[in-house]
Length: 455
Image (cartoon, rainbow, N blue to C red; front, side, top):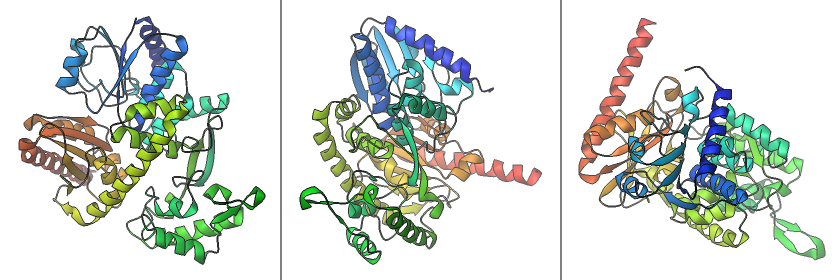
């Protein structure tokens, strides 16, 4: 499809007028960082206009959710809706989404319909910004939360708009979570993107490394009051020593992405306080913690500047980090080779809210097949999450299509992006789902091999 950014922005302007014509819509958004930030952009736009609305955050748009929405006169779907044709049954509805879509008759602001890749060029929060032209910082948070960094395509345009307004600033530095808000030991020990072998989730090893580099952990402030230093407090020489040491560790490990993953472009928000909401990676992790631990409303309140929500959000973040540490430890021993894909059976061991995150952290870009993880879902279902190496996606792998296809024999619902996708299937249909997923991957591998031979 020919790329049409101008046409997409025109469609967004049309949906903005349509949205504000609604009398009191129900805003239904997804629960991950992109969904929460996108939902906050839409809710915030209605607040700014003084228009009434209601809001609901959900994990999946299944039949039960559709039945509830059928009772609503007006619905705005955000970060979902484009993949379920039953939205056509609703009365007045519009969709702001970036997932793969087909057969949807309702008005939709979806970059994929205009030749723009919704998997790496524009998140749902970015699409929401394009509709309402409000809060570009939250659009960047959503993009980072959906692993779209550095910014490319339409995300780059959103970034430039945020820089013009002074709400966003880009930096090139160590690409770790917590550069501004975490003490140095925790900054290193709880780094998972990139994962640092021997350091991540090992406070003792992180402290040993800093001691070897002779980097002080405490900062003496005014009045001789001490506080723990953050990475942002280091001088240039200290930063250089630390980055060099980490690069050496990465280069000596096949699990890690390599030294190239250490330095990257990051995004800060000068108009927000210097806490977990100041930097995009930190902010997105905070929102993920809220959403994936069933408190997305706290995340929305933080997005919209409610200071009273911050302490509870931090508590959820601490819980999130602890569960991730335990999940990674389980995955490192429990991942199996199923031939067509690596398989992680985490039923009863890893919560459904973080199984996708753990799969993404366990994934190695050197792998020649994706990883599929499962966890216990609600009401007798299995939550499935899949992640793929970028090289496979560049050769045509589409996990969103795979999840949807594998659900055909399982009676579930699935979809997502080419590089990351998920599904929910009845527990009794798990084997049928896995068999079909394996067949799908083997067929695609055979097609790729045939194409290479013919070429």
